[in-house]
Amino acid sequence: MLGLCPFRGRHTGENQAIHLWEVATRYKLVDKIGYFTLDNATNNDSALRFIKNYLGEIGISFDPVARRLRCFGHVINLVVKAFLWGEDVETFEAEIITCADLDREVEELQGWRKKGPLGKLHNVLTWICRTPQRWDQFEEKVRQNNRGLAVKALSLIRGNATRWGGDYDSLTRAFELRESIEELVSAAIRRNQDGERGNTQPHALLQDELHLEDWDILRDIMDILQPFRKWQLMLQGRQHYGQLHDILPAMDELLTHLEDTRQGFDASERRNATKHIRTALDTAWCLLNKFLHILFTSKSLIFDTNIYYSYYILTNLAPVHFASVALHPEMKFEYFRSEWSNRPDWIENAEKQTSTLWEREYKTGINEDYREVQLRVNTYMRAPASTGEDLESQTRTNREALQEFGDIPDWKRKRRARWASEYQDELDSFQQRDVLEELKMGPLHYWLERKEDIRYKNLAKMGIELNSIPAMSADPERLFSR
Image (tube, rainbow, N blue to C red; front, side, top):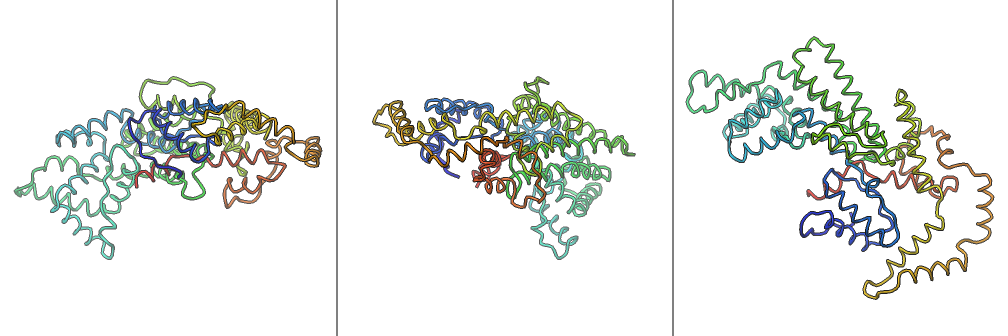
């Protein structure tokens, strides 16, 4: 974290770019601006267009489309929310929020109930937590049924329609406290049937009571969500995972998981009971598959005008997604060839995109064009903002001085010439080399150890940069939430 500046004014792309540029200039990092892992907000797109203009003024090219990466956590969030609440989840969220704001309790309960057992569970948990007296009754049942455990460690968790992680946590906790939940609800319904006074919600609670088949479906939902939760936590970057090269394996695994689960339900004796889940699985699979399909096409595809599909239309894959896998010592091109053996067009595209990125931005190393850019950047950094010094004149002077004295000694020039005569492309050489040992420290550490190896010096630079790109924007969002 370099800067957490007070943000004044509207959150426009231009305003965001101004703040970012101030931080990059302060720390002399304008020549090191690389890739941005962002959510799908449109002001992020315009911010990068302004950054392109700033960099262009000092002679640095910047592609705001190729350098704009999508936070995979947001992709997971959209897919899972569509699975839980349907394709039109935005409308569902708006209806629930409106009912809550206007205190329209009956409509809010009905809205949740229409979403099946998970919505009924939400209503039951809301009913338990609504009054202190009811909560005390529930805690007492938890103590009786879980002797020896701290009650606070087993408190209820209520999910919501905005962040699906809360729904998964709510499910796992509900199963831990299932006995206490069922006892409290059953007792309330019996008291109403016996005519006890003061019970104002008997009909609603009776409609939301969870039966055996409801709990079975909730168990199915929890099992379906488990791999998504696993990858969400892994890609937050707390351990060795969380870099760009993890995204494609995550997508492959999640798609296979959805396909296998769908086939299992088709062959199950509970086929009729799981109709709703099978429809939800189809929705989730289509969204994730369309996202993956766009990754491997050279142009955007228009699938639908639905807000979810429009998100995926914007996710044309930057070549760094493929290259980050290709430069992982345990994956390389072999990952594409083994995992996508039935899609030769995907394999060809992934290898082509990687090679193009390597040849365009890294293969030539520190050439004359790069030195000129470095000189312009250094001059820009040194020049006082108020002097009005002629930037082009100063750059020309520095470059002429560099050429006069030479940038490397003769012995090093001769050695490089000898190596050049025996040259093998670094990327090709790396793809042919076996890495038998497991990477205990991860691919970034692997390339850091090889940055001075003349055989892979340029490729190491590429490996270090690509393996420094996070798969999710979780770290800055987590910091901002503190």
